[in-house]
Image (cartoon, rainbow, N blue to C red; front, side):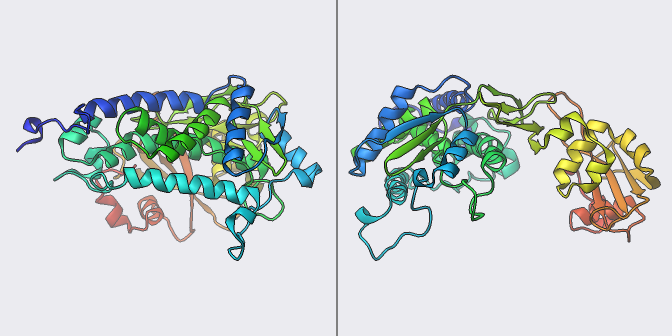
Length: 415
């Protein structure tokens, strides 16, 4: 039976699954807007949801303290260690769970809910299964309806068009860069990162699956999920303490651009003049095409600062601000050789030698053109540092892929 002639797959209520998945995609877009919202927090709704979660733990309502940003929350927690949520480390399994610190019990509460929900989602056809003769490349170009007609499991379709876009945008492109910039790295011993509660992308996914009529959850899981949904819809990050709960307002500005090749609404942070995310107390983060950068990259990029910067992504962003042609001229790079890029038709590879050994002790810079176009149709140039054993740009670019020059030249097209 061909996919075109296959009967429509339906859920338990007889509704075509393709219709339900398309509803899920519309809900995904709504949740992406919620995750990027700059509306003031609904404090009453947020406090009510947190109070209900405390109640499920057998705890009285906490005292709420609202702050304008995660940075302000970190300042409060550092100045008053008693307000810091306890129990981030390994729990004492020798004690009953009711005697564990509040944060650990909250994590267990959510984990148990997640386990019950996933038990209803995972068995549906096996989410890693693809349809007959459907490659991963083909999957990326198919609509949800075409995926289902090709025999791909509902769970796999939802992973591709709902869960992954939510995670890539809200977790990978927004939350994690903000957490590193505003709170420091999690688990570094002295930072605040890791104590905050913010997992909107998973809450959104669970809510979408239920609201779209794709899966039904046990009553206890559904009731607890309703509290997490209300919290995610009403505010941003929060820190649950044993007696006091610190609640952060949402940002007042969020600037994004579509991710290259995005098919399901994925975006990344970007603004080429101002902070990509800004809070009311002037906390925020500069981001260029998804790369968090220090302020000097935006305001005063210089060759000296670029040379002193260990982050290759920040260096690349700063060079792009100056312009590759200007950077090459100012640094005195000498063109050693150039050749057409066999993995990227129409583009050229250019191999330069630098007058100094640079921060990694290398003297060669390979200038390449990105194989994927940006949303405006342009292709960005970027530099790759390669060992000075290479005089041939094709050998050098092959090395960056773990290939020989001959092997790279045989590639149909790189990305």
